[in-house]
Length: 622
Image 1 (cartoon, rainbow, N blue to C red):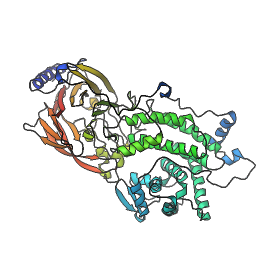
Image 2 (tube, one colour):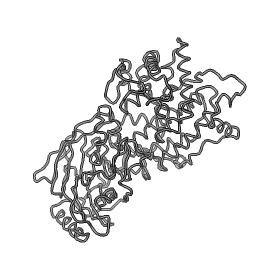
Image 3 (cartoon, rainbow, N blue to C red):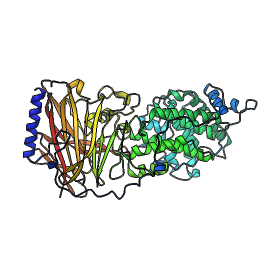
Image 4 (cartoon, rainbow, N blue to C red):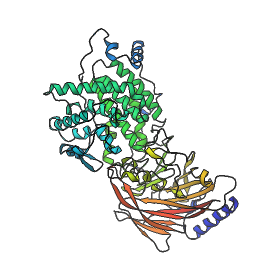
């Protein structure tokens, strides 16, 4: 079928849908106003944060190191060339013995349940308990990624601190630290010495030192302080060898913390501040979103900066302006991924982080702001209408050098109403190795694990091993506008991607229209030939709508509609003009890494390579 024939077929399909009372959103510049029922104007959102005053408005930083005098710049240069900090600070004096100059109090709290499990003799990672004796901490230990980060990065110390007072927890902390030291006698060997793990570990040691250092055991105290100093020196030399910029940021934060809390640390601090500014400049987009486009990574970066700010406060030193600027940049993109329940959506491998955990992080950041409205490289579009929230991935996937658990999720969306999530993505690839089996990690990153269209059972962007991505979506076009209707208005998003152009000669265009009362979401998935002439033949397609937990779907007679029953008793209707609609099994991963069985609606069939369109409607009844 050629392009002209496809256009005629599309027109006929639209007419058939209109006669049957179903939606066909026009592709022209002006949407049809008779396709949406009359509605009352949207009420203001009483819970919206206040608008920032002009004097508090965010200004994007140039990511330059803090201002330094000529002597400080010389000091930083000498340290970067390998001259020891003691030689720079006091060249004619014997180096001071390692000691901590202050005790850090961080506003970030850990998971008390995980801390209590530690006191009972178990690591507790994403719902999986592992006795200490069964966890190999050495260089040959084959730990899953979540366990590796917790064990080798000592991130468990925050959880332990949340479970009791230092005297109650110190015995467990010392026991695990000694076990780790015995298992890792050689510096630089094994997963313990990946730069990110080293950075997380050193920062945890410095921030939670009271759980590791006993005043009664001088020998242990000197040993632990010596290991801290040796680790900081290793990190000085190897921080730029991190796997990615996020790992490098963790390393630079630890270097600065060591410069603040260990003796004669000014050269190290100056060196670390310059390195952190550069690493953040290469990891963060101008809109404040990490180039990995991962909400989990965004949260980790915010947490690292909060801990670092606490280290400055411990020594009563004013942190550089870069920290405040970065926190003000990083928080709005994260808020842009929240649903009506206050939790995060499932994007780029993350689970649905709970509202309480996110709220605690934002409170600790001391940033009060609104969700990001105009995303750049962050790409996630957010539309709210009274109780409804619509999130859309409107950007190409992250580049390979930034992707960690990269997902082929372009044009996928999530939709919630109040506290209930109707349409979601599976999520959880970054949590594989806990309750999520490692063997399905790549499947959770696939296009089919997201609420979008799949052609030929292929990913819109190639999913590779080690969390990386290959060829696929290179360009995304998006247009968002407010449109007036006969009675009221709606927000219309039109977006397209070229991920299937090379393989099938088709561009996927998705149109979403959310009515301003939040009661109705209409959509159309359109296939447009990427060249002047459409190719012959057909390609199988599937449009997937993964449903939220506790949403019960019942297929209607005729196989073209389904009823969605929510836990609060409200009923939503899903209608399509496609020939085949089915209900299949799926899964959804929460913020604790626990997979839950859910259902998915699937529109499937064969699409002409000359193009086609498939309309659908999601509407609240009653």
